[in-house]
Amino acid sequence: MGKPKRIASLMNCDRSEYGVISVDLDLLSRQITWLAGLGISSPERDGILNLLEGIQDLADPIEENALNG
Image (cartoon, rainbow, N blue to C red):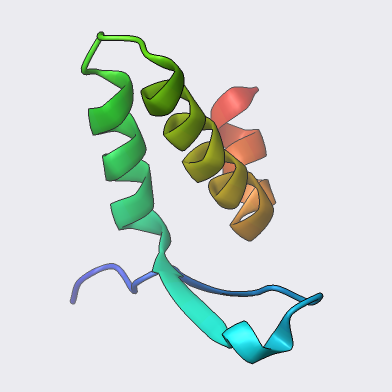
């Protein structure tokens, strides 16, 4: 049997009308790795990478702490 999916539900508490989004944390991790590996730095790429890493930190702090030390 496969590993269960790690899904986080995120919502903007200031704007509840935006609703809730679900994020597949394993897919997010792969996307961050891919984007970081492009090697071409630009303000746009770096901003998107920081945003995705911030979502990952907020959605799964225990996993992120284990990866970083």
